[in-house]
Length: 464
Ligand code: CAA
Picture 1 (spheres, rainbow, N blue to C red):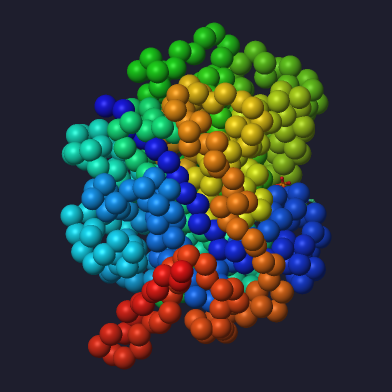
Picture 2 (cartoon, rainbow, N blue to C red; picture 1 turned 180 degrees about the vertical axis):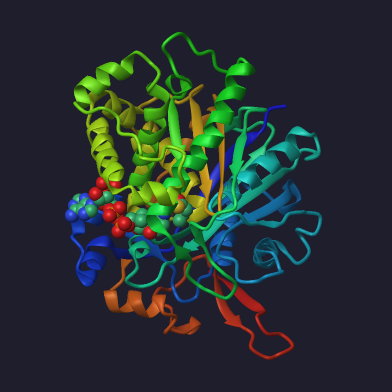
């Protein structure tokens, strides 16, 4: 049975901090953020927003846009790594908010959970709900998967330039207008590691930045190898002589903690894919260097990072590789459009990959590309660590959905934060009722109970 994404809606907080202001305040060259990390603006939540109300706003949007009633929804999953409760699932808060609009108990028949595995959990939720539909259990109902996060790092840390916030809701069914997932090829990798994690009670993560970059590449590649085997053995993709499966993927959408990570991941995958093909020698000639190897090729990520000579040579090799015409052509045609939104919004953790997908659809369509039948490969990564690689095909009816996509209109008028206000919000120095913006047709958090018997209960209202 066909199953996939029928529609998607984006909710991004309207406050943002400009990368140039952050660079100035931290004494960093602005070019490092703009060009090196590919970040110009980072969305920041107002004082009265939490990941649950971001998720509820994205859900309400998709329901209203598609004129759905609660009866049409069979499952509502929220995937996040910004949880604020150790037990109560975030989708229950979302149901509570939606029932303010649709009536108390209107979602009672619906099921769902909150899923967690850093940035990859939304992909697991999509996969599980797709299989719920494929198994014939949906009985004509939709599943909604909402990915919602606030990416927040310590002030002054290297991660501070890779923050962001937002939610994306995805409507799944058995006759998707946007994308049908390729069946039986979804592949995963998993490992117990500590590249990025957030112990109980800590608001910001503990991050080993360069380590996390390498672990991302390695885990994605492991899942990619498994996906490759499946697409070839199942006959989904026929790979000719001197070809790689990537030649048969029209667009690549990668997890984007910052937009240039997409480019780095593409370079990593291509180096491994092209190395055994005749085209590699032509590239080596153009690059003018032999491909470097680490002192200990079977070593750990730490041993690689400590092998300074290798890291420097490898960095130079990658730089020259990404400057070749062959790489540039592929980058521009298969990846670049997915990076545009990330530059203006920042890291959305679980939602980053799907913001990239959304960006790819919108900007390719604007460029006049006919997307029907195009195959998209997805590389999802969650620290800690797991990766998921999967693919899907754009459906013939996609235009009906994509023609109205406009990320700028969907966000609404944005307001740049003064650096002082940014730091006050970051350090939780403003109370819920000191919001900087007036909410417009959206849910906001109005109170967190403090009495012992109700401690932590959250109250939300919808502002007309
Ligand atoms: N002009 C132009 N470019 C410059 C520059 C300048 N003046 N100075 C530096 N750059 C470039 C660098 O060359 C580099 O690009 P290349 O690697 O392509 O050469 C880029 O800017 C970044 O520089 P650094 O690597 O030196 O940056 P950093 O070490 O200070 O920080 C980071 C980068 C490690 C990603 C940090 O932002 C961080 O810790 N972020 C949070 C963790 C993260 O995002 N990890 C990603 C993988 S894990 C994951 O994906 C899950 C998740 O969502 C968190």
